[in-house]
Length: 422
Image 1 (cartoon, rainbow, N blue to C red):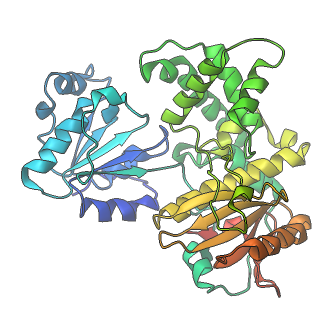
Image 2 (cartoon, rainbow, N blue to C red):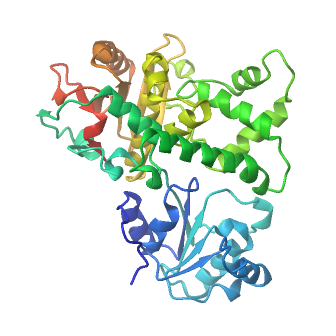
């Protein structure tokens, strides 16, 4: 019998966890803290070890530090929560998986990448690594799920009225984010929770991750720079220049180290460029698009409220793009696919999102908050189609305020983000 918590909302990753526990000896669920990893893992576990349990003075962590076998002895599947606190657990579980080749023995959860020098084996073939994110709109109940990613690839979509979506509601979803504990909160509470989260990162996580003392003020400046560049194609040099401005506040190596820490804490989830066969491969841009793992982090870092975003519609558009691409990543990865972006350096043509399935089939998506930009988005998609040697399976515009699911005469779908699922 699993240890599922009362009130648990089913997550898209649940199905993959179930399948992988039938294939591998152990799985490792990685992602930002507070995204729901532990509750999801409990849904599949029969026992649990909490390495961050303050109530018993970290007794289980101390036992694991003495000998990992002292904690790897409970009913299977056994959950080891925040395993990176004792990195030797990884090697211990790998050895346990080799002992009898039994499947589904252990579930690991971790909110940061451990110091690799403390791990001696990759765990390939024994431990399956899985990435988990905050909740998509479909998981939180804010999307009807009328259209699935699979429907798009099969071109199996019918026109349907979905109802009006208020701009303030879209902003609410951005500020709230996909954190399970924020789903029922109001705007003020959402900002308080996210800002508390960020303060915990600054005061504890940036040092605890590897024992290196880091300057909180420098990290705060880097966070603000990354937030201002959300959903843009900005190089590290741009971030470094933005942080230093006219003052030599931090060296290039320091800033890059701090950005690396944020990646290891799973707070940054950049969107890499799509490698497509065009007439000239040199035309394809290679720079990743900047993203925090959840758009609410940008709002928390910059202190953005609904009224402020209503007064800066341009930046609101970037945050809406971030919201959509958070969801698209969750949806496509449920099929073991990937999310990309595209830029043609010669013409400057950009496509917001490319969804690629494991077999190489892909679709192109433009993201527009308002309906006034749909025609421009359609022209971009058709230009991209003409450029492509291998044609996309579908062309789609994801909108924030569109009131219907439609297929245009040119074959391009227009779909509200609040109607999409995996």
